[in-house]
Length: 357
Ligand SMILES: NC(=O)c1ccc[n+]([C@@H]2O[C@H](COP(=O)([O-])OP(=O)(O)OC[C@H]3O[C@@H](n4cnc5c(N)ncnc54)[C@H](O)[C@@H]3O)[C@@H](O)[C@H]2O)c1
Image (cartoon, rainbow, N blue to C red; front, side):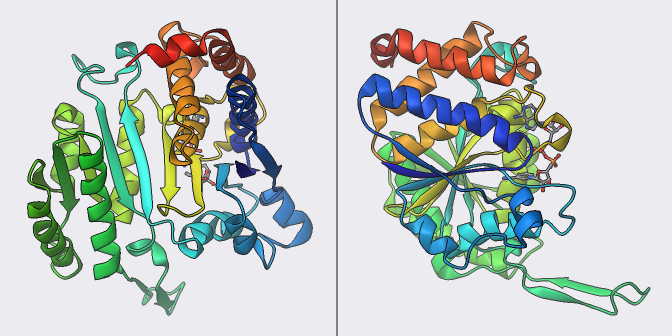
């Protein structure tokens, strides 16, 4: 496996070091080579060279089996240009239409909800990743005056809506899940979201074993907090998915715990923790590396290295259960030590982990 690694900015660098540690660990334990190539693309690189990514940057990324990203965002780059080119640009250019974000509570102790635990918080969110309001179509007229007009269009195409909803149903069917919930705002956004309604209703009957339900996004946000146990698979658009997966991160114990994949099935895909670069925490050995580490498990699983992925997930679970974590999730370790704890579990007893369901 040939992986491009973009550590990026802020705590992206800190957590990527631990993700790399884990990739090297599973490679040596399981004997499957993983070649990592570090790309320097970041705010530092942009400020030094004026380049966000090179002219052939997206083609270069396509030459890898997968891309791992830490996080991008730096207060010195006020228009966030480098992050937009590197992260959003890659999502669009590589057509990574599936944003896959599992929300799984690893220990009851981390639940922010009263009387809700592991049995209640275990679902996945599929966020459409290439359309919606993030395509940056629009403009500003009379900017800076009291007559300013700002237009930001939301794009929904049949192809884009169909492929993400189909992916959610296919995922449920392939994983023995029986419930898919689509969330939109079709009561208020009657053009674009009528398309989501039409496609969802047309696809649902093709999956007779799956109960297809619909919720307006505001109701879904409320139910995620009140009754998250009702969900197995959620599918929604780019903006709503961005927001509800931060709620998902909180349900897992904090943003530092959440992993994600930006996927085009069968093509080069990008994996990253859900959190950002958290500048105040950068370089202090305090950031939680678990979201980044679990993102490597998603990446390996997607590339077919299922045993390695399972071993990482089991090792993270063991580390969390035994409190070998950073302070944001109740432990007392630094970033490096929390990464070591996971690596040690993988080294110690990979076979034991694999026997677990
Ligand atoms: N995918 C990405 O690269 C990505 C995602 C979101 C935000 N950003 C960028 O990151 C920068 C900071 O954004 P923000 O502050 O809104 O979001 P953030 O995710 O960086 O931080 C939000 C909060 O969560 C905490 N947090 C996040 N990750 C953590 C971790 N691993 N361990 C412990 N605590 C953690 C931080 O302390 C902070 O309080 C901005 O430039 C933003 O544009 C990048």
